[in-house]
Image (cartoon, rainbow, N blue to C red):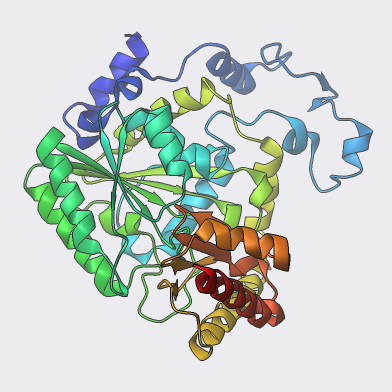
Length: 433
């Protein structure tokens, strides 16, 4: 094993992070080659810096005029230069500050400096690179983002274990905790992915459910099981009902117990309406971990980034940084959030008021971008195709039992027509079946 990896492992020795590391995670390190020499030269080379593979003129990276005229608010360095592997330092600091602002339960708790990765998919995938071994079990609800399965089962050759997401109209907290207990009994560790608001159902935990979940995980950790809790907060901040958890479970789980490591995957994709920027953040939170140990984990993650994409887009990062520092940022976000909430209300009100065909059952939803129907006694895929072919309406079928509808992309004035078309198409299928 590389000496640098050994040094990082020694720093983490005895912690839950050390016990949870996969073989790849244990072998990872950030090299001290070209990048570190370039960083040193940036600080100390006062005549010429001939280290990095970029072309400069007059002290700035070369930039085509065709691009300059489209990006008048950015310097060439901000627009076209490489970002460092871990991301633009100022952006990382600003995002960390925002985590404390958006998650009051983090007050007084030590977390790592977020590391920039190329999107939320990469965030989840890289976290699994660090901690998931072949043969591990990763616990997710039966209704989850399908990419989890591709990452966990195909990339990492681990087992994705599911549990029923709902118990009646509530989140099935006990089923999740049962999965954690079972995984702990098999291997002494459990890995869970928490995604709220949930994709595909648009469900967020109530405050009572969040309390029960945190207490249950604490009790399991106290029994000796090491727990990795990955919080996928892609749709953070889009809760539309009272008494819902409006912060990440990361904030509740960080510093909860020495046997729990929380890792937050988030980013501006949905929070800031920049889906194509492909920027995500990974932040570590564990009870008793020092800044030096957080830095060791971040360097291991940087090794994974360096060995795959090298770094994330500098252009996207600097545009985001300018937006976060803009005086109108919060007000502008609130306008779009209110628009999404009105679409949610329109969907809720229409479904409550109309007579749906038997077998087309709306699942609980209270947040996010989506809601889903449980198609009982007929094919969700058949309904999807019928809506597309005969009504010109696009939806998503999952497991041939669920139909996901993104109300986020439908104008408020069109929601009634959308719901009526879905009901009509479903009734037609049911009458034939």
